[in-house]
Amino acid sequence: MNQAARGAGAGRESDDQVDAELIARWKAGDERAATALVERHAAALARFAVASGERSDVDELVQDTFVRAFNSLHGFRGDSSFRTWLFTIERRLLLDRRRAEKRRRDRTEIQEDDAATEYDALDSVLADETQRRVRAAVERLSPTQREVFTLRVAEGLSYKEIAEAVGTTEGAARVHYHNAMRSVKEFLDE
Amino acid sequence: MNDCMNAEIRDQLPELVHDRLDAARRAEILSHVEACAECRDEIELLRAARAMFEAQTPRVDVRYVVNALPLAKPRPVGVQRGRAVWTDWRIAAAITLLVAGGSSVAVLRRDPGTAMALRQTVQTPPVRRADGRSDSSGSSAQPQLAPAAPSEPTPRALVATDAQGSGIGASRLGDLTEQQLEALLGEIDQLQATPVTDPEPVSLHVRENTSGAPEGA
Image (cartoon, rainbow over all chains, first blue to last red; front, side):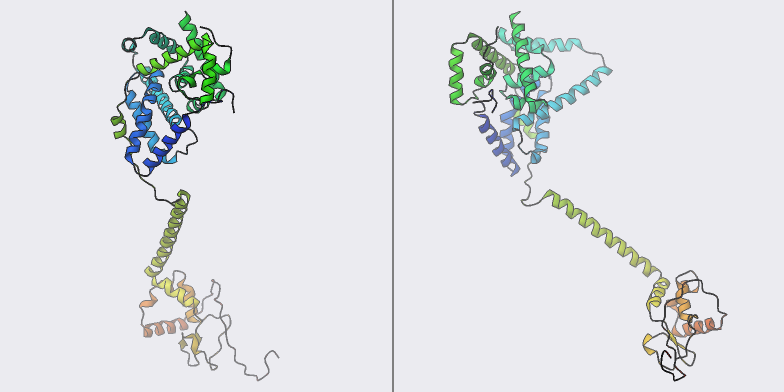
C-alpha cells in the first residue's frame, strides 16, 4: 500500500457500499433510490462545476450528468466509485460545453461586462475575506490544477480517484495538487 | 506560509479535514499537528478553501434533476445479452431461408411447363410398345417392346429436353388432354429427326436377345 494512502479511506468504503445498494435498488425498479443518489451527489457535482469555471446553468449541467449516468447505469461495473464516475461524466460535459462556447464566441463579440458582473456578484456571496482571497488564488490556477485542487480539497478524493476522474495518473495528480497548493500559498503571502 | 517537512503527513491533511482516516492514523497525525505550526496553517487554509467552494456554489434543485431521470426498467434475470444477439441471427437466417424457398416454389407454380419438364426429366424414360404407341408409365415395360436405337431419343424425351429450353416444351403441355397429347406425339414422330445439341438423358434400354446365345458370348 502507498505510504500516503496508509490509514486513509475510512468512510469511503461505506459511502461506496451505500451507493452500490442504492444502484441495485434502482435497477430493481425502486425510483426513490434515484432521488437518494441525486441528494447524495448533486452538491458535489455543482461545486466541481462552479470551481471549474461554470457560471451559469449549473442545475442543467448537474441534471445532464445524472441523466447520462442513469442511462448507462445498467453498464456501470463499479470499477471506480459512483461519485468518481459522476465527476468523469460531468467533466466531459463541461469540456463539450466549453468547445461549444468557444465556437459561439468565435462567431459573436465577447461580452466582457457580463463576466465582470458575475465575478462581482460572487464576491458579495463570500463574506469572509479569507475565502475571497482563496477564491482569487484558485482562479489563477491552470484548469488541470484547479480541477485536482477542487476534487482534493472540496471533496476529499484520493489521488487515485482524482486520476480516474480527470484522466491522468495518480502521480501526476499528486504533483498537480502540490503545485496548486504552493501557488495558492504564494498568492496568499503576497 | 511554509510547507511542513514531513511530506507524508502533509499529504494526508485533506483526509484529516474530511474525516477519512482510520482512528490510529488520525491520532498519529493529530499528535504531529499539535506540534507543527505549518500543518496547522495548512489545515486552516484547507478549511477556508472548502468553505469557499461550498459558499460559492448554488443549491441544486434535486426535484428538477430527478424529474429528468429515466425510469428504472428491471431486466429479467437470466437473459444474456450475447445470447439474444445469437437468437436474432438465427431468426434472420430462418426468415431468409423461408423467403428463398417460398420464392422458388412460387416461380415453379407460376410456370407449369417448367414444372412438368422437371417432373418428366426425373421420370423413367418412356418405352415404346410394339404397336408404335408410347407408354409413359415406367412399370409397363414388357419384353415385347421394340428396341430403340441407343442414340435416338424418344419423342417424350425430346419434349422433356426441349421443355427446358424455349421451344415446344415451353408451351403449357399440362393444359392438353390425353388425346391431344397423343396426337402431338404422333406428329412429332413423323418429323425429320433433328440433331440434338443438348446432352442426351441417361436411359436404360432393354435389348431383346434373339440369337439364343448366352449373354456376353
